[in-house]
Length: 88
Image (cartoon, rainbow, N blue to C red; front, side, top):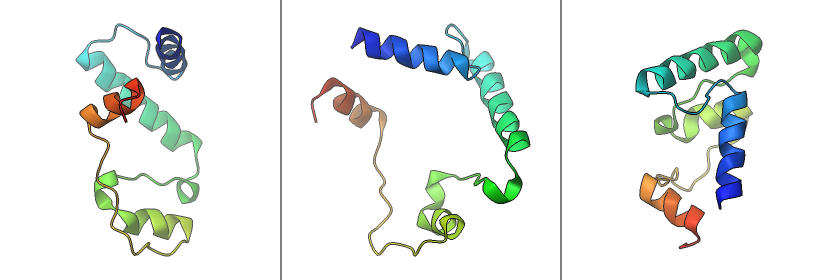
C-alpha cells in the first residue's frame, strides 16, 4: 500500500500539486491546473463538467444517448477508503 501511495503522490506532484501544500496552496494549484488545461485544449474538445449535472452534459458532449439507469451517486470518502483498503 505504501508504494501505491508514494506513486500517487509522485503523479500528483508532476501535475502541479507537490506534497506539503496547505489548503490555500492546494486551491491555488487546483485553479492554476484548471486554467492550464483550459488554455491547452480547444474549447470544442474540452468538457468542463460537474458530476452533479448528471448524464445530460456528459452524454451530449460524447454524442451518446442518455442511459435509462440513474446517474451513480456514490464515491463518498468512506466508500473510497473501503475500496482502497480492500473492504469492498
